[in-house]
Image (cartoon, rainbow, N blue to C red; front, side):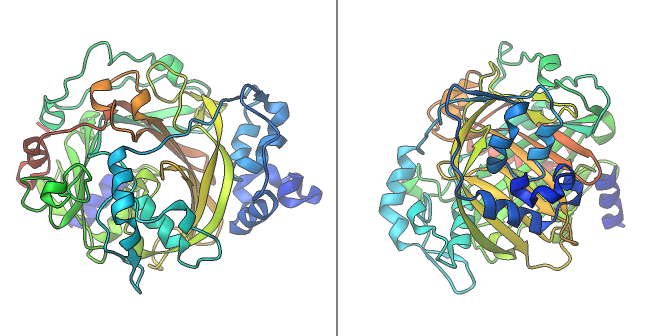
Length: 476
């Protein structure tokens, strides 16, 4: 009965193919895993013929094709007045705490026979120089560097507003609400001047919006924290910090029919130990465990899953990893020109990034699930070489056809113009948006951040938020 109830909640270029395939190249619904292989073989070592200060238009798209995934590139072909404003690459380095960890502990890290990370303390497990195409373990090294990427003590967002999108048509921009005080707490109050958003400008272009969900999110790291060497790099005065890597809370507070629905997931430090997860569904009035299968199911009827968080928030050992190489890509990543630090949307379907672009060195990695029941046959991620954060990724269905495309937006915390008290000094990336589209069916979801950062929440706040006994109270 529980599984049925929870399920009801989830449901509630010539260069690419050659001249003979000119029509097919504009129809990404026909693309397969082989389409991606052809693109990568043709463009892997490509270098841009454009430079910072250039503004590329629709007429310049062929110059951009080698630096955007097939399936994603074609979405910009539909945007006839698109402009790619190219800026200098904004190079960043992580916090000195991370660099100190790398120097002190990186050389002792190794991989077990099953791929598990061993002797890891803090920082990045592997240097970029250790990740090469001739090393069969490079895929796993990318996976573990990604898994241990620098996020201060965790991430917090008042409203990751989630909007259902259908290609074509018109829309009315949604307005973000603030979450219940019982969830957000009072340690980082929202300043009125920060909570000012011109959503008519944010949600540009076309696309039909069907529904929006107010979504509160918090992830807290419990171990491998460089700022706590005196407590064995664990969150002080927390009983389970010795066994927990992180916990995350996802709660939905609007509209009324989903208000109070919440999920808590715990990831353990032991890479071989499965996650624990719990959900509170108001209609059931009870807290229930989430099975492992649910993590790859649709989250609240969206195109996104719990496992898709951040590009990948599953357990690395449950997948096979293949490093496809380093590659120059153009990306909306690290730097934004907008005064609220976040993405603006454009294009005929209303989901493409409208911002400044820069050339960045990326790791291309493919992961294939070990579980034959998983809905993806494989997924390919673009991971930034400096931040180890996903910028773009795609997934193929069980038949090997291109299914989903995700574009991710991040800003550098120390560049933040708003919510500076929980961003400046972190020297980390700060999530801004993820936009998920089902290429086969012309639909998707826009997840955009309103009011977030990388705060130092007290142990008291974390203990209350992740108290399973209080899940039933927090929605009131």
